[in-house]
Length: 190
Image (cartoon, rainbow, N blue to C red):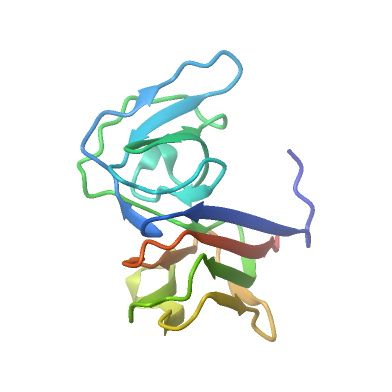
Protein backbone atom coordinates (compact mmCIF):
# COMPACT_ATOMS: atom_id res chain seq x y z
CA UNK A 1 0.00 0.00 0.00
CA UNK A 2 1.35 3.43 -0.89
CA UNK A 3 0.72 6.23 1.57
CA UNK A 4 0.19 9.73 0.28
CA UNK A 5 1.86 12.51 2.20
CA UNK A 6 -0.70 15.00 3.55
CA UNK A 7 -3.63 12.60 3.11
CA UNK A 8 -5.89 12.64 6.18
CA UNK A 9 -6.31 9.20 7.76
CA UNK A 10 -9.34 8.44 9.92
CA UNK A 11 -9.30 5.73 12.58
CA UNK A 12 -12.78 4.65 13.70
CA UNK A 13 -13.83 2.57 16.66
CA UNK A 14 -17.12 1.85 18.39
CA UNK A 15 -18.28 -0.09 21.41
CA UNK A 16 -20.59 -0.29 24.41
CA UNK A 17 -18.13 -0.76 27.28
CA UNK A 18 -14.89 1.01 28.25
CA UNK A 19 -12.63 2.45 25.51
CA UNK A 20 -9.69 0.54 26.97
CA UNK A 21 -8.87 -2.52 29.05
CA UNK A 22 -6.55 -5.49 29.51
CA UNK A 23 -6.08 -8.70 27.55
CA UNK A 24 -6.92 -12.03 29.18
CA UNK A 25 -4.19 -14.47 30.20
CA UNK A 26 -5.20 -16.82 27.36
CA UNK A 27 -3.13 -18.03 24.42
CA UNK A 28 -3.74 -16.15 21.19
CA UNK A 29 -4.56 -18.41 18.28
CA UNK A 30 -4.06 -18.18 14.53
CA UNK A 31 -7.43 -18.62 12.82
CA UNK A 32 -5.73 -19.87 9.66
CA UNK A 33 -7.99 -18.27 7.08
CA UNK A 34 -6.58 -19.00 3.60
CA UNK A 35 -6.43 -15.43 2.28
CA UNK A 36 -6.04 -13.40 5.47
CA UNK A 37 -4.01 -13.74 8.62
CA UNK A 38 -6.38 -13.47 11.58
CA UNK A 39 -5.47 -13.92 15.27
CA UNK A 40 -7.97 -14.52 18.06
CA UNK A 41 -7.34 -12.52 21.24
CA UNK A 42 -9.27 -13.10 24.48
CA UNK A 43 -10.65 -9.95 26.16
CA UNK A 44 -13.51 -10.65 28.57
CA UNK A 45 -16.48 -8.31 28.12
CA UNK A 46 -14.63 -5.92 25.77
CA UNK A 47 -17.75 -4.38 24.14
CA UNK A 48 -15.90 -3.38 20.95
CA UNK A 49 -17.66 -3.88 17.61
CA UNK A 50 -16.24 -5.46 14.46
CA UNK A 51 -14.40 -3.20 12.00
CA UNK A 52 -13.14 -1.00 14.81
CA UNK A 53 -9.44 -0.27 15.07
CA UNK A 54 -7.66 -0.60 18.41
CA UNK A 55 -4.10 -0.44 19.72
CA UNK A 56 -2.31 -3.42 21.27
CA UNK A 57 0.91 -1.69 22.38
CA UNK A 58 2.05 -4.23 24.98
CA UNK A 59 1.98 -7.28 22.71
CA UNK A 60 5.21 -7.01 20.74
CA UNK A 61 4.15 -9.34 17.94
CA UNK A 62 0.91 -7.39 17.32
CA UNK A 63 2.13 -3.96 18.41
CA UNK A 64 0.36 -1.08 16.74
CA UNK A 65 -3.02 -0.30 15.25
CA UNK A 66 -5.07 -3.42 14.44
CA UNK A 67 -8.37 -3.88 12.62
CA UNK A 68 -10.94 -6.04 14.39
CA UNK A 69 -12.36 -8.48 11.87
CA UNK A 70 -14.86 -10.29 14.13
CA UNK A 71 -16.00 -10.24 17.76
CA UNK A 72 -17.72 -12.34 20.35
CA UNK A 73 -18.46 -11.39 23.96
CA UNK A 74 -15.03 -12.46 25.20
CA UNK A 75 -12.72 -12.36 22.18
CA UNK A 76 -11.78 -10.31 19.15
CA UNK A 77 -10.20 -11.44 15.90
CA UNK A 78 -7.59 -9.04 14.53
CA UNK A 79 -5.90 -8.74 11.15
CA UNK A 80 -2.18 -9.42 11.14
CA UNK A 81 -1.54 -9.55 7.40
CA UNK A 82 1.69 -7.59 7.78
CA UNK A 83 3.39 -10.16 10.04
CA UNK A 84 3.53 -13.91 10.52
CA UNK A 85 1.64 -15.32 13.49
CA UNK A 86 3.76 -16.05 16.54
CA UNK A 87 2.27 -18.04 19.41
CA UNK A 88 1.78 -15.62 22.30
CA UNK A 89 0.08 -15.86 25.67
CA UNK A 90 -0.54 -12.50 27.32
CA UNK A 91 0.12 -12.23 31.05
CA UNK A 92 -3.25 -10.56 31.61
CA UNK A 93 -1.74 -7.11 32.23
CA UNK A 94 -1.26 -6.04 28.61
CA UNK A 95 -3.38 -3.09 27.51
CA UNK A 96 -5.67 -2.45 24.57
CA UNK A 97 -7.31 0.86 23.77
CA UNK A 98 -8.73 3.09 21.09
CA UNK A 99 -5.87 5.14 19.69
CA UNK A 100 -3.53 6.00 16.82
CA UNK A 101 0.17 5.83 16.01
CA UNK A 102 2.55 5.76 13.04
CA UNK A 103 6.13 4.52 12.79
CA UNK A 104 7.11 7.89 11.28
CA UNK A 105 6.45 11.55 12.21
CA UNK A 106 2.77 12.45 12.11
CA UNK A 107 0.29 15.06 13.28
CA UNK A 108 -3.01 14.96 15.12
CA UNK A 109 -5.71 16.91 13.30
CA UNK A 110 -8.57 16.25 15.71
CA UNK A 111 -11.11 13.75 17.00
CA UNK A 112 -14.85 13.26 17.41
CA UNK A 113 -16.62 11.30 20.13
CA UNK A 114 -20.33 10.49 20.20
CA UNK A 115 -22.25 8.79 23.03
CA UNK A 116 -25.66 7.20 22.42
CA UNK A 117 -27.01 9.11 25.43
CA UNK A 118 -25.99 12.18 27.38
CA UNK A 119 -23.42 11.22 30.03
CA UNK A 120 -25.14 10.73 33.40
CA UNK A 121 -22.00 9.91 35.39
CA UNK A 122 -19.24 12.36 36.29
CA UNK A 123 -16.30 10.57 34.69
CA UNK A 124 -13.65 11.91 32.39
CA UNK A 125 -12.81 11.13 28.80
CA UNK A 126 -9.02 11.33 28.79
CA UNK A 127 -7.02 11.52 25.58
CA UNK A 128 -3.28 11.36 26.15
CA UNK A 129 0.00 10.73 24.39
CA UNK A 130 2.32 7.89 25.37
CA UNK A 131 5.51 9.43 24.03
CA UNK A 132 8.03 7.21 22.26
CA UNK A 133 10.75 9.21 24.02
CA UNK A 134 9.61 8.00 27.44
CA UNK A 135 7.25 8.78 30.31
CA UNK A 136 8.84 12.17 30.99
CA UNK A 137 7.39 13.31 27.64
CA UNK A 138 3.85 11.91 28.04
CA UNK A 139 1.07 14.51 28.07
CA UNK A 140 -2.71 14.94 28.07
CA UNK A 141 -4.50 16.24 24.99
CA UNK A 142 -8.00 16.25 26.50
CA UNK A 143 -9.29 15.49 29.99
CA UNK A 144 -12.86 16.58 30.71
CA UNK A 145 -15.97 15.09 32.24
CA UNK A 146 -18.62 13.61 29.96
CA UNK A 147 -21.34 14.41 32.53
CA UNK A 148 -24.09 16.20 30.58
CA UNK A 149 -22.28 15.72 27.26
CA UNK A 150 -23.06 13.54 24.28
CA UNK A 151 -20.83 14.84 21.50
CA UNK A 152 -17.26 16.14 21.46
CA UNK A 153 -15.61 17.57 18.37
CA UNK A 154 -12.04 18.65 19.05
CA UNK A 155 -9.91 20.30 16.40
CA UNK A 156 -6.87 22.33 17.46
CA UNK A 157 -6.29 25.59 15.61
CA UNK A 158 -3.03 24.10 14.32
CA UNK A 159 -2.40 20.36 13.86
CA UNK A 160 -0.28 18.91 16.67
CA UNK A 161 3.04 17.40 15.54
CA UNK A 162 3.88 13.94 16.90
CA UNK A 163 7.09 11.94 16.79
CA UNK A 164 7.37 8.51 15.21
CA UNK A 165 5.80 5.88 17.50
CA UNK A 166 4.09 8.39 19.79
CA UNK A 167 0.77 6.75 20.71
CA UNK A 168 -2.51 8.64 21.10
CA UNK A 169 -4.69 6.85 23.70
CA UNK A 170 -8.37 7.19 24.66
CA UNK A 171 -9.52 6.29 28.17
CA UNK A 172 -13.18 6.33 29.15
CA UNK A 173 -14.66 3.96 31.75
CA UNK A 174 -18.22 4.33 30.40
CA UNK A 175 -20.05 3.47 33.62
CA UNK A 176 -23.33 4.42 31.88
CA UNK A 177 -22.64 1.71 29.24
CA UNK A 178 -23.48 4.09 26.41
CA UNK A 179 -22.68 3.01 22.89
CA UNK A 180 -19.85 5.24 21.73
CA UNK A 181 -18.15 6.06 18.47
CA UNK A 182 -14.70 7.62 18.06
CA UNK A 183 -13.10 9.09 14.94
CA UNK A 184 -9.46 10.17 15.04
CA UNK A 185 -8.14 12.34 12.19
CA UNK A 186 -4.38 12.35 11.62
CA UNK A 187 -1.79 12.72 8.89
CA UNK A 188 1.67 11.30 8.15
CA UNK A 189 4.44 13.87 7.82
CA UNK A 190 7.16 11.74 6.23
